[in-house]
Amino acid sequence: MKGSPMKKPPNVIIVGAVSAIAEAAAREWAKQHAHLVLFARNAANLGAVASDLRIRGATVSTIVADLVTADPQDLLTRAAGGLGVINVVLIAYGILGDHAGAERNFTEAQQIFETDFVSASAWCLATAALLETQRSGTLIVLGSVAGDRGRRSNYIYGAAKAGLATLISGIAHRLAGSGARAVLVKQGFVDTPMTAAFVKRGPLWAKPETMGKIIVRVANSTLGSPVVYAPWFWRWIMYFIRFMPSPLFHRTKL
Image 1 (cartoon, one colour):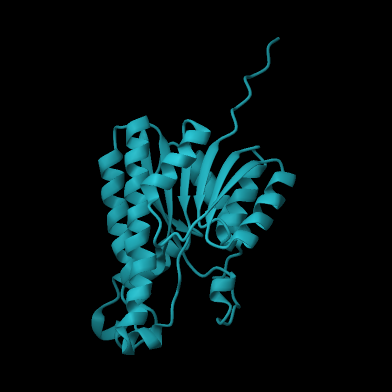
Image 2: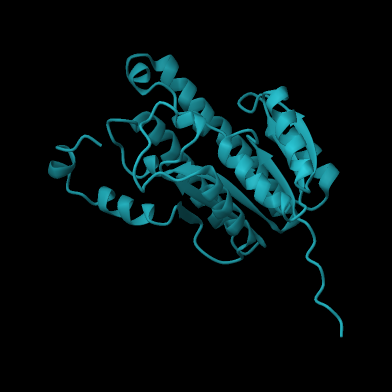
């Protein structure tokens, strides 16, 4: 009796690989003995992540680059040349920035926009072109529920994520029928170094490991919406917030 054929390890590119969520996803892919190409700016941190993933079973190569100023098309072409067919590209970098400072100083706001929307968009468009050409593969972009409605606590960051959400919606539509696809993962509260200043308590806070599992599950799926809320309950929380009447919404301190 013949056994079922072994599934080939996936070829995965991770842009922003030293973020807590990206590293958690990479560890999940390492369980599949994935071939990983990791992009990040900090060489020492990137090397440490790569070493850990190799121990866990992944084949890993790294590219050190400033993700905001780099040429995504050139770097993706280099990565694809070493891997062949790309199964997944995960774009997982970003900054929260200083919201209060950004309200007073556009230079701070511009840094948020440049990082979270402008440069991320360049990576998304370059990836879309690559996957469209090979007629397969999944682009996964880490977004945020902050983009669902402008709130006084983080509307500048939220505006960047809202623009990114519209871009991914359009890319998903563009790729429909090509064999490739694009998915936006809208995260809620996640306990990471980026949220170190926040008080973390209650059931709404997720761990990076939870997010990593969700991302890999999205990558392995062939069906479903181009938008995934992570964890799932944020879909209903944000539904309520999006459609809350403005007179009531403006009395909140969200």
